[in-house]
Image 1 (cartoon, protein in one colour):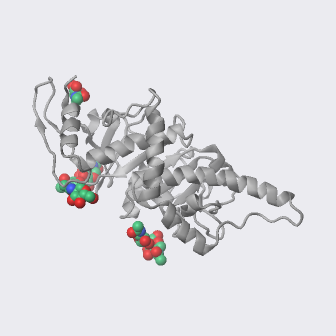
Image 2 (cartoon, rainbow, N blue to C red):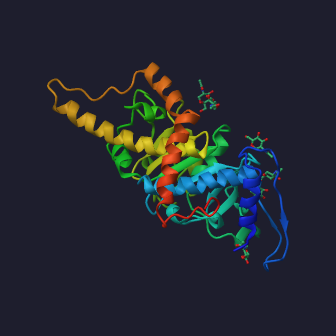
Image 3 (cartoon, protein in one colour):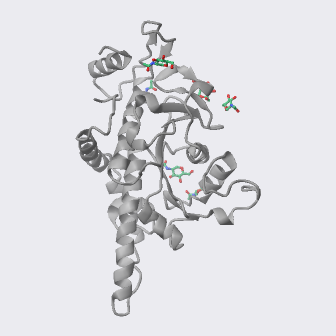
Length: 313
Ligand SMILES: *[C@@H]1O[C@H](CO)[C@@H](O)[C@H](O)[C@H]1NC(C)=O
Ligand SMILES: *[C@@H]1O[C@H](CO)[C@@H](O)[C@H](O)[C@H]1NC(C)=O
Ligand SMILES: *[C@@H]1O[C@H](CO)[C@@H](O)[C@H](O)[C@H]1NC(C)=O
Ligand SMILES: *[C@@H]1O[C@H](CO)[C@@H](O)[C@H](O)[C@H]1NC(C)=O
Ligand SMILES: *[C@@H]1O[C@H](CO)[C@@H](O)[C@H](O)[C@H]1NC(C)=O
Ligand SMILES: *[C@@H]1O[C@H](CO)[C@@H](O)[C@H](O)[C@H]1NC(C)=O
């Protein structure tokens, strides 16, 4: 079927470089019975491809289930971010993607159907404030993941921070008390008034700011007690990579803690040394290794008809 996306894809293949600085803005009028649609630029389309792959990959790798989400800062406008409306990440397609204001997390438009604006955009995730407030707090963050990964939740439940136990999880960090833990029960009433729902959800700017404030230099992850984790990254791929390896790290740390306790004169695992943590993070999060992982993960989600990245298929 010939539609605007087929045309966009064909055009993109013609200009085969993914980073070609050609502003691809096509004004499409009326022909298929809807209003004026401005197609996103190549840069936005490339980020959207990663965003859909990222949603599917996070589900495939069991980092998210029905809940959880990933977003990207708009590469064409640093005051906006892109994430799907409220839908299970496995089911996201280009038509689920929404462009939001970072300023107040309100919907601007459907990213791939700009004729759908404001209130006409389907309801977003209540917790999109996790994303808006992280982008607001950290100007060089361009990808964010929020997930309810159970092996990570165990650590917040036990009030034990994660520390990097392996190179691929280097960005988990080696802070003395491990990754910071955000705890709803310790929020001041100025952030969480007595009469507001104490349901763990980051549903407004004040809660989002409190969560963003919990990040500490030296860790890219915040554990959320009773809830999950928030991960900041320098791209969608980077945030997805960090989220997956934080989950893996939680398993390794659990095992190592148990084994350490069983050993004679046992100790909890110390984690990586500072030099190894820093160098391993640089190596594992390099474009080369990130691309190798991404190539595998996209090949895996492509095997399953559950996932439809209609911008790439
Ligand atoms: C698209 O992204 C590339 C790489 O980041 C950048 O060099 C280029 O200026 C961007 N193009 C536009 C139109 O913003
Ligand atoms: C960037 O986004 C902001 C906030 O939505 C908007 O006010 C501004 O007009 C946008 N800039 C451009 C160049 O589109
Ligand atoms: C949200 O923020 C944008 C950008 O600052 C602004 O243009 C818009 O009016 C705000 N919307 C609401 C509902 O506050
Ligand atoms: C864009 O949205 C309009 C209004 O909901 C709809 O009629 C149209 O089919 C949509 N276009 C695409 C390509 O989905
Ligand atoms: C992002 O900014 C922070 C300071 O706000 C800085 O410590 C960090 O090195 C920066 N990261 C990158 C990748 O530029
Ligand atoms: C640590 O993070 C804060 C913001 O939370 C920033 O202002 C500061 O520059 C950072 N310090 C270093 C050494 O990166």
